[in-house]
Each structure stands twice: as structure tokens, then as C-alpha cells.
Amino acid sequence: MAPVDTALGICAIVASVLVVTAVADRIRFPAPLLLMLVGIGASFVPFIDEPELTPELVLIGFLPPLLYAAAIRSSVIDFRTNFRPIGFLSVLLVVITALGIGLLTWLLLPVPFAVAFALGAVVAPPDAVAATAIARRIGLPRRVVTLLEGESLLNDATAITCLRVALVAIAGAVSAAEIGLGFAIAVTGALVGAAVAALAVAVRRHVNNPVFDTAISLLVPFVAYLPAEELGYQDYHGSGVIAVVTAGLLLGHKSPVIQSGQSRLAERVNWATIQFLLENTVFLLIGLQARRIIEALSTSTLSGGLIALFVVSVLVGVIVLRLVWVTISRFLIYRVDRETGEGRPPWSHTVVVGWAGLRGVVTLAAAFLIPEDVEHRAVLIFAAMVVTAGTLLIQGLTLPWLVRALRMRGPDARSDALQAATVLTTAGNAGLAALEEQARPDDEPSAVQLVRDRITARSDALWEKLGTGRDSTETPAEQYRRLRLGAMRAERDEVLRIRSSGTVDHDVIEQVLASFDIEESMLTIATERADRLSENQTVATPVDPSGSCVHLDAAPAEVDAEPLSEVCLDCVREGTRSVHLRRCAACGNVGCCDSSVGRHAERHFRTSHHPVMRSHEDGESWRWCYVDERLG
Image (cartoon, rainbow, N blue to C red; front, side, top):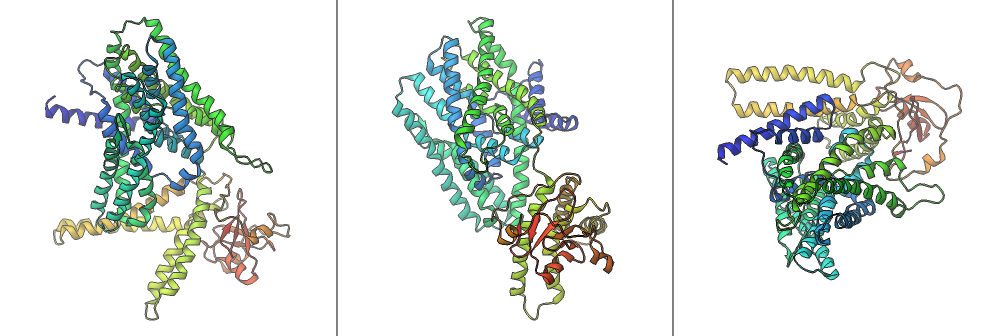
């Protein structure tokens, strides 16, 4: 293929991804599924020369950056907390699926068990992209998303190791000791990933340029993947997948310490763009392989009925095995508190995790690793395609319906705002204390007050969003955003007018416009988050990781004092406006929160020394301790 044709082909793929994704968003249809369907249809168009999806392209070109993009957004803490269920899904389930499908293939087709086990390893791992892309779109509980993302980060490593064992067995006999050796060598990828992460941390501590820092980030997944794959003994190799995931998790965890805010912002935008293009291109390429795979199938000596029975059996097998194992492991993984009965997630979580076993590009690419001299290879590759397309279409299309039928809901924006407000309040108080220590006698009072106002404004903007049910007018933070964005538009227009005059250097103009862009992006993000807050939804109180405190334990959950005012009487007397109301747990006094002008709830605590206040808004049952800054 000529270089011009290659360039045109790449442009056509990227343009198709953008157009189809935009259409999917407009019609509210999962973009991965629509891209695959478009690819299948396009593969049968005569004048389209579809690109071949080779194992090298997927395993080296696509997999490392996609895994790294997911890993740097994942939480090491959540990963460690859910290590047991993630291990049951990403290791044991993959091995069990490979053995189960291998046995089924061996019974239905005239192939050796080593070949059958190779197919089992190919179809065993759910896709890292497919499940999480759909999970993010439909809004699943965070615990479910954590399990699916954690599983998808590691299951490819298990599957590829199983496939390598199968390929060794196809070439000759393999012992149990050699199988154990293969898995042990694969795990050494974690050491490579940790070493690469340590090196990147050491280098990034001395890099202040966001462009350099982002360039280093782009290198990391390949620097981790390639050496790990080369590390090995005989036919067994270290796992590049584990290396990339380890490096990504560690660097994502260290990012706030080793990177500047500007570098983190640049890296976040760049990796979001890369992930969007790669993960959607993957599904389009999967569909484009349809005609080539079906044409290869026409040379098979097996009957059409046997082939149909086989591929349907494999598809049903991977779905059923996952559902059964997830159900069984529910009773093996979680320890239940005998007194409270807490510990295991709801059955709805188990059902959704069991149904979210969508296969993707790794399954199809790994199928091509099966040696060409293997009998009925075309049928095995066709089975991998049917499993990939079948799980994406059947489970992908029904997963949103299942989530709605089980009445599962994603994270509540108002509960998140409550949790964020408590974190920012505690952090802000630490910042204010540091400000008092660092402020010099000769510091300008207006500068000190400006810092103090900016610290308190962040948490105030979140607190005030919780009590919007009583008053439909704009909150102070909303007023600030509206006024600042309007003023900023005028400022930008004036800068552009100055730019047109040619009297100021271009670099200076770009620096001023960049400062506007950063501030505008912060205000826009705050506005989008505020728009997601539901006024009529009950606010779930998040669990404070620090635990409760003696004041919260001693304070009553309800206040029987009469009469209870529905307004802040202090605001009425002073002529100020309440934003969010709180009620004293000791005496029932109603006051406005810290985001209000009067801050009468805090003033009541200062004068009465009653430590606990309860929300006095509809649908909110949380309490706040002013002494220990704890949420209850």
C-alpha cells in the first residue's frame, strides 16, 4: 500500500470514529456497539480495503496505552481494598473459563486439547475498554465500576499467559511445573513496572515543563511493556500487561506529589484524547475484520451445522461460566459481619458484574496467534469473532436495561458534593491555619484577606448547592460564575482587539489568553457539576474514613425541641439571605451554613459550644461536628 493510501486510510478511520461517535451520542446508543456494526457493514463494501487487525498492532500498538490510560485514573487504595474480588475475577475466572471452553471445544471439534485450551484462553478475558466504556455511560455504583476496571486491568495478563502455555503444549508436552513457571515469570512484569515507575518519578521531580512531562508520560507504557515482554525463560515471558498496569497505578498515585498542576492538566487532556481515539478505533477495526474471517471460514471441511452449534455453544459458555463463577465467588470473597449482616454487596451488584463480561479486541487479536498449521484454525478464529460480537451486542445492549430494571444508580452528585465539601472544609481550615503562621506583620491585609476568601470560597460553593430546595434564586457561587464569565468574555474581546492591532507581541497575548482559558475551564467544570445536582433526591451521607467522633455519637439523630423555625431568624433580623439551613442537635436552633453571608450556624456554635449541627433541608439527614470536623 502506498504511503498516501495509508495516510488516507488512517484519516478515514479517525473521521469515521468521530462521526459515528457523535451520532451515537445524539441517538443515545453505545458508541462501541455502533462502531462495530458500522465496521461489519463496511467490511462487505467492495471498494473498501479494510486494514488487517494483526496481533502485533493490538498487543503493542493499542494495548499498552489503553491500559496505562485506565491505570493512571484508577485508585491504588481502591485496588488494594478490592484485591480479593479483583483476583477472583481477573485470575481464577480467566483460568476457569479457559479450561471450561477448552473442554467444550475438545468435545465438539476434532482438535487436541492443547488447541482447545488455546481457544479458551483467547475468549476468556473480558475487554478492558468495552465494559468500562459502557459502565461509565450508564452510571454504575462506584464499587461495581472499581471491580470491572480492576478486573479488566489484569485479566489480559492471565489470558495471554494461558495462551502461551497452550502454544507450548501444541508444540510438545508441557508439565505442571512448566505451567507454574510460566505464571511465575509473568508476574515478574510487576517488578519491571515498579522499576519504570520509580525511574519516571525520579525524572519527573526535576521536570517543570508540562510539554516535557507529557512526553515522558507517553513513553512510560511502552518502556514498561517492551522490556517485560523480553524478560523470560525459554518460551515463557514476563507480562507486559502487568508491567504497564503497575507503572500506571503507581504514577497515578504519585501524580499529585511529583507533578505540577499545569502538568497534570496537560497530561489529563492528552491521555483523554488518546484513549478516546484508540478505544473507539478498536471497535471499528473489530467490525472491519468480519468479511475476511468469514471468507477464511469457507475453506473449512466441517459442516455448517457443526460450526453453528460450536460457535453458539462457546458464546453461551463464556456467558454462563461467568455468571456461575461470580455467584459462587460472592460467598467465598466477602466476610459478613454476623451482627450487622454487612459485608457482601447487594445481589444486584453481583448480577451486573456477572453480565458485564463483554469481550473485545484482545480476544480477536489473540486468536490470530494460534499457529496457521493448526487444523480448523479458521473455525476457531470465527468462534472468537462471534464471542466478541455476540457479547458486545447481547450483553452490551441489555446491560443498561438490566441496570434500570435492578434500580441501580450511579454516584449521587449531591452526596458527592457533601463529601467534597467536608474534605475541602477540613483542608481549608488547615490552609487558613498555615496562612496565619506564614503571614508577616508587613504583609498587605488585602492580600491576606484575598487568600482567605479564595480558600473558603471553594467549600462554600459546594455547601450551598445542598440546600437549593427552599430557594430557586441563584446562590452566591452561581452569581459569581455568571458575573465572572460575562466579565471574562469582555476581557477576552478586548485582548483580541489588541492582538488585531499588532501592537503587542504574540507570546504575551497568548500568555494572557491562556490565563483566561484556565480560569474559564475551572468555572465551566463547576457549572457542569452544579447542573447535575438533583433538588429532589435524597442525599446519602458518605462514610467518613476517619470514623465517627464522641460528639456525633453523643448527639441525637433527631431534635425534639419546639418550636422549630423553618428559617434562619438571625438572617431575618439582619436582612441577609440564607443559602443552606442547619439545626443544632442540642437546642434546635436553626442557622444558615458557612456559605451564607451571616454564617449563623457557625456563630451559634461559637457562642453556645453545641458541637453538632444537623442539616435542616428536605431529603438530607447528615450531621456535622464543628469540633472534630467530621461528617455523620
